[in-house]
Amino acid sequence: MLLENIGTSVLVSGNQLPELHALMVEAASILNIDAPDLYLRQSPVPNAYTLAISGKKPFVVVHTSLVELLSRKELQAVLAHELGHLKCDHGLWLTYANILTLGAYSIPGSISYIMILQCKIYGVTS
Image (cartoon, rainbow, N blue to C red; front, side, top):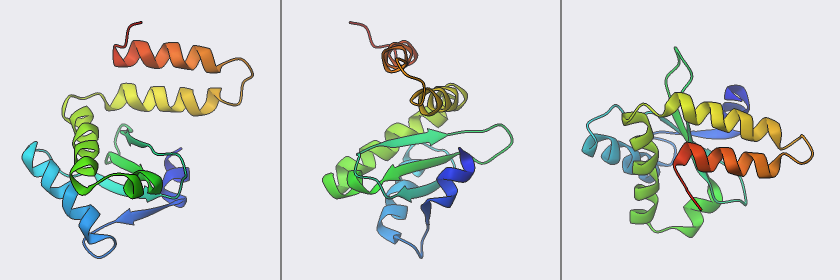
C-alpha cells in the first residue's frame, strides 16, 4: 500500500504544487505538528486519507478530483482534518482500516462489512 501510493502519486513540495504545499504547511503550523509528506493522486473519486506506518514518516494522500472540486479554504479544512488524525494518534487505526478496506473490496459481499467497520472506527451511529 505504501509503495502503491508513492508510486502512483506526485510528492507535493515547495517546488512541486507549491500552493497545495503551503496549505499543508500552514495547517500543520496551526495544529503545532510537523507537516507530513503530502501526495497528490490522480483519481476521479474525491478522497483524502492519512497513512501512518510504524517507523515511517506519516503521509497524507489527496485525490486530484478533490483539489478540483474544493476551494482553497475547503481543501485546507480537509488537510487539517487529516492532520487531526495524526495529532490524535489515529494513524495506526486509520492505516489498519484503509488496508482492510482496500483488501476487502476484492472479496465478494464484503462491502457491507467494510461500511459497518468504518462506522465503528469513526464513531458513526445509525
